Every structure is written in C-alpha cells, then in structure tokens.
Length: 232
Ligand code: TMP
Image 1 (tube, rainbow, N blue to C red):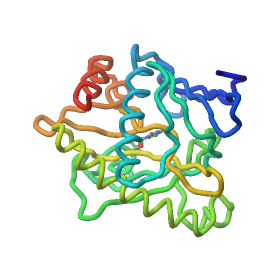
Image 2 (image 1 turned 120 degrees about the vertical axis):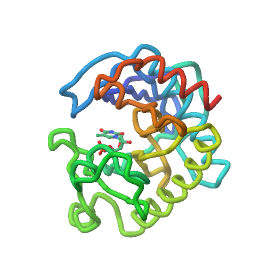
Image 3 (image 1 turned 90 degrees about the horizontal axis):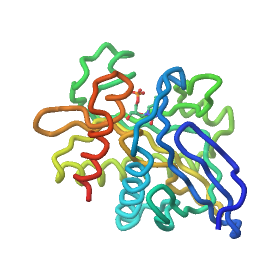
C-alpha cells in the first residue's frame, strides 16, 4: 500500500509503504536532458524503464549482485528495498561517447583499451560534477570500504550486461549506476534503462537510447519499445 511520497525526481517518484524497509518506485514518462534544461515527454517510457529495470535487476541478482529490487507491482511501479542513496553517480564506459568523447577529444564510437570508471557528485545545483576518489573521501560521500564494493560491483555489472546485450544484438557503450545503503550493506539501486545506458544496435550502430531524445534524432518512443521487445 502506497503511503506518502518522499521524493520526486525528474523521471521517478518514490513512496513510503506500510513497511519501513520497502519503498514503491513509480516511473514517469517525463524526460529531461542537460540537467533539466530540456524538457519533454516520452510516451510509454515509464513502463519501459520500469519493466526493463526489473528484468536487469533480476538478472544481476541471479549473478550474485545485490540490488534493491523486490518485485514488479504493475506497468509503472516496482516494490524496492528502502535504501539511502549514496550521492555518487557511477559511470562505466566501454566505448567513448557523450561527455567523455567531448572532454578527451575522441571520436564517438572509439573503442577504448580499458573500461573507464567515473564518478560524479549527485548534485543538481552543481550539474553533477565529475569527482574522483579523493573528493569522495574528502566530502564523506562514501567510506573506503563502500567505495571498494561499488567499484567491484560496477565492473561485475558491466560484464553481465555486456554479455546480456550482446546476445540481443546490442552494444553496451556506457551506463550510469547508483548504489544505496540497506541495513549497512551497499546494494545496487535506481534504474537500468535506455535513460541511463547508451545502447547501440550491433549491426547498424543505431542509437537505441535516450540520446534520441537528447539530440532530437526522432523515433524516440519507438526506440524505447524496441529495446523492451529485444530484452523480453
Ligand atoms: P555522459 O556521456 O553524458 O556523461 O553520460 C554517460 C552515461 O550516463 C550515459 O549512458 C547516460 C548516463 N547518464 C545518466 O544516466 N544521467 C545523466 O544525468 C547523464 C548526464 C548521463
């Protein structure tokens, strides 16, 4: 049973339940880019992101990675463990794209010799600036031990997801993760969806993710449906 809303973000709402250890997450169709400067709606996105995230979290659980997922409730809602989110965005990159391509002057699509892990400080007022492990320690955003877990899980998740998408004709270019604390343990939270991953078609390199919205590439809704179809 849904109780009061405790958080509304750009793409999701989070509600308390009668159980203090469980939250309900509701996925919206609202889409933003460039730290909220661009606003729009992607019809059906909430349903796609809810269902896809549930499937990704269940897959990761099977592979031994703890996540906040409890169960899918309906098309737009999931029951999750009530975590306290670490204010760090964890970005994993296999291929240069987006802000990394720009920052380092690499052509988008350049395959890198090593998987890159980046951290951003989750702070909308500051535009989620990139930080390193010294900043994380200096600002007390996570303990040394928690960060070690985050790093280990991030690389494990990358392995699992790369294989999974490859089998479905999709290249996993990069993605963003968020972790939370649940009863003192670090677990994966937030979502894994076309909003938070760059996914390219393996044959054509067609963008199958939120870049279609960010960059006005068209076929936005159709692409979200296509990704869901491929993973179901
Ligand atoms: P970037 O290249 O723009 O830094 O994005 C890296 C990855 O992070 C990409 O897969 C999209 C995802 N991402 C989010 O999930 N939320 C955000 O606010 C941004 C900017 C990127």
